[in-house]
Image 1 (cartoon, rainbow over the protein chains, first blue to last red):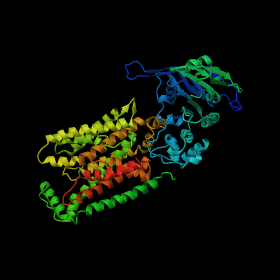
Image 2: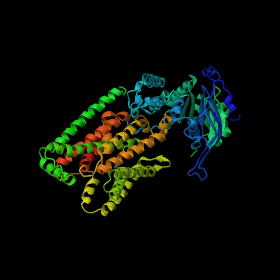
Image 3: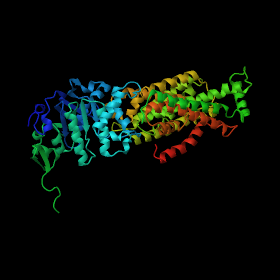
Image 4: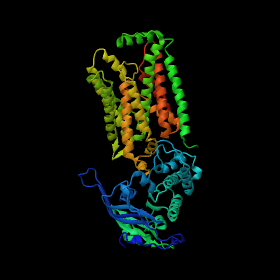
Amino acid sequence: MSAPGAAAMFTQDGAALRERRGPGDVRLLLEQASYAYAAHAQEAPLFTLEATSLRARQRELVAIVGPNASGKSTLLRLMSGALPPLSGRVQLDGFEVSKLEARTRAQRIAVVQQESPLLFPVRVWDYVMQGRHPYGRGLHFETPEDARVAEAALEHVGALHLRARWVHQVSGGEKQRVVLARALAQQPLLLLLDEPTLHLDIGAQVELLRLLRRLADTGWHTVVVVTHELNLAADFADQIALIARGKCLAVGPPAEVYRREVLESMFGAALEVEPAADGQPRVTVRGRVVEPV
Amino acid sequence: MKPLTPKRLARTCAVLSLLLFGAMVLSLRLGAVPVSFADLTVGLGKSLVGAGDQAPSDYRMIIREIRLPRVLLGILVGASLSVAGAAFQALMRNPLGDPYVLGISSGAAVGALLSLIAYPDSSVATLLLAFVGAGATGAGVYFLGRRGGQLDSYTLVLAGIICASFLSAVVIFLMSTLSGPGFRGVAFWLMGDLSTPRPVAHGWFFLILGAAVAAIYTTAADLNLMLNGEQEALHLGVDVTRVKLVVYISAALLTGLAVSVAGAVGYVGILVPHIMRQFYGSDYRVLLPVTALGGAIAIVLADAVARSIVAPMELPVGAITAAAGAPVFLYLLRRRLL
């Protein structure tokens, strides 16, 4: 297993799509970034994310994989600048993200959270328009530019036909695309998604990851996605970061980081890792899951 | 689905301003003809107690000296409480966020009563202490309503209700220390009343109302995103800490203002924003001005009813808002509109 960071320097060969990519610039840089949650300042921390290093380049899709409560979301919040790192650096194009002004940060980083609950009903169009907030001033009256960007964002995710609908009345998969459209309306350099596939069926999950892959390939967005779907992550991501118990175990291309011993100890289950026809590793559960009666 | 433009905003406000004007005219005329004697007597009595040198002798005087100030007071109270309610709803991310429900009005009442005991003749002191009471209660309820670092809507409402009932006990205790002629006035004032003779610096109060509403309105676009939760608002570029501070202080000031002049008038802060949402949607850029105007209309009309329904007696306006508000509240609740 290669050292974190160094592994990220390699790009892998695979689908034809990926071969077209030139070497991108490093967009997101995490260097020995750590964080600790404590109930009180004087007490021992309740949860610690140990020093993590990772780089994501232009055109890259990075997946963060790991068991529940392992620190994936904390890592994502460090990347979004919502949390300042306790030590180390988290930089986007050379700027420390937690030090950016909220408005500037929202122009560069968009976050799709696990849940986006609504207090009062909103139309899809107005919801996507919220993504234009960091570009507006005063009362934020809609400009033709805002309308153009929001329309393009909706079209990009294939949800333009939903524009007049209420957000709370569309299906789970549609809602996820609408939330993504709002993130795209921010025109971010870095797109962060926290388990966007959580409540989706397998078809909608593949659809969403394919969409994220396309977004990364356009060269505009570097995409980082937290997910539980090991195989989908291997299919679509350039790099995978394995996180367990607040520690980053490995960062690198799927074929390098998916080791049976590592995954088994991470998830506490008997697993099999085999290369599939396309060279990507495939993770399956070993033996019969249900014990014979 | 047309986007919001300054023109559409102005037109909406103009229509409601006309309605408010109509309500004002109605309220000024109401009672003038049928219960003119009662009003005259009360009016004369008031002016004799206040200033014996100029006894007003015609209706115009009564309207100008008694009814108009009262209508203006209604506008002040209605607009303040409604905007405060809409603001707290966004800030606390709770449809029940209302100065009355959350106990913030009760906090303001405690402050106002303390000032009445310590400085009986200073309306500035009353306003100031009511503001402090509202602010302290708001902060207390906000922190009690948190669970694991997150604002929890059920905990918040329960914390508000419990604070309100505790503060009501404090109010009763403070009232028991008052006696004599002041007692009835204070009792009426607590129920929400526009008639209590109290020195009111109208101009100043309207200035404060304008400043506080304007301050909240500068954050209208941010409040739309605050409805999604603070974390999302932050990710969408809202300076959450600044918005919370500006809106919280202004809303507490509005509550203190309303309570110091008219006591605890219930249901306005919760119902007017929700009714306006049914007509104009939940975009705070529209909602805040229409809520201010709608709240003013509601109180002016409620006070007109309070003056005329049991003439020649008068009801406190709080009784009318509660009697009318509760059924409307239930209707909205049953229709799942809250």
